[in-house]
Amino acid sequence: MDFMDSETQPPYNLPQLEADHIMLSLLSPECKRFQWKIQIIDNQVIVHFDDDTSQPTGDSGGSLGSWLGQLSTDVRLLPIDYTDWRLVNPVIKEKAWELIQSNFSFDDPMMRKEYVMSALGSRCKDIKLHIWREHKRNDLNEMLQKRPENIPKNQWYHFVHKRFTEKWKKMQERNTKNQRNNTMPHLCGRKSFSSKRNEIVSNFSMI
Image 1 (cartoon, one colour):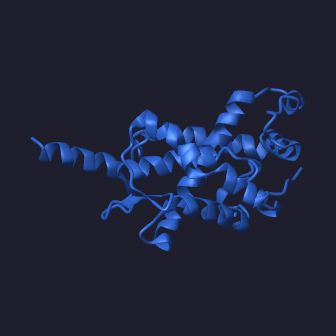
Image 2 (image 1 turned 90 degrees about the horizontal axis):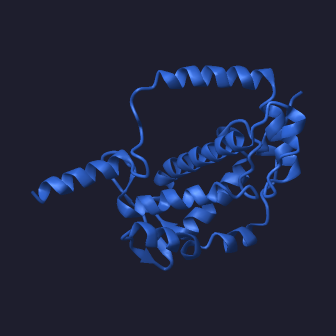
């Protein structure tokens, strides 16, 4: 059985999404918890990038990463029933980019867009993996009945059915095998390598 990817699905009501994703209401608890030092101009966080790696750095990079993580959980804008982030409807991605730009300011938006949207795709992938692990059942019909309340029925139907196909199972087996061969981490938790490097350099300069 074949299923359509989310590129055929229109995004939900954008004004309501904008109201739900106002920067300060989402970010302030995180800022308080992690004591981030960020620069805000016209209700936008100024995101700083490392010149060598072109990755977000400092506390502004951390705030961007956490906000993207929260945005990725909104299945109204970012459905969970797609197979490949690269194939997601461009309209959906543009709406997400508009929301991001309404809360964050970049020195060169077009140059930073590729990195930011790739990071959002990674967050969405993590969300899908978390949902699968939390609700996984060995029986397809049983799992269909375990639909989380916040996920629309049509999304859940396609999401579950895809993961019970032989094609998906073989892909998961291959990915699991490849993952075991990865010995070099590419992330430092919440911090990018650029942020970690700058932190180390700063600490050495104080000695």
